[in-house]
Image (cartoon, rainbow, N blue to C red; front, side, top):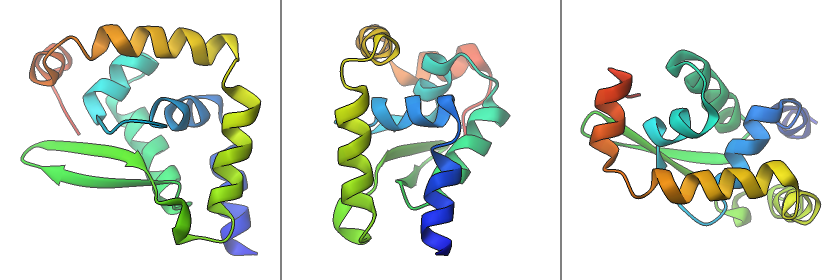
Length: 122
């Protein structure tokens, strides 16, 4: 029951769902996620912590950067079904499409430059 509740809580926020959708096929530095969502670093860090607690994302530290990706769907009985449902429901959503378009522009910029603009990464 606890795992289900953690996933439900994680999916109860639009910004966390947006983060999950942009991580569908890629790994991103937290600075890139901050840039895409347009939120304060501390807010994004909190969102990512909730997604990690629900085991929907995995993070790795590389120097001063933290990179996130979707968790391996095989790690939980709920995870594969949850992520498949999420993708099916939102792949053609206007916000998801706009985020994908914005992500393409963000990926053209060196992550270090994005971090410098934000003055803090992670």
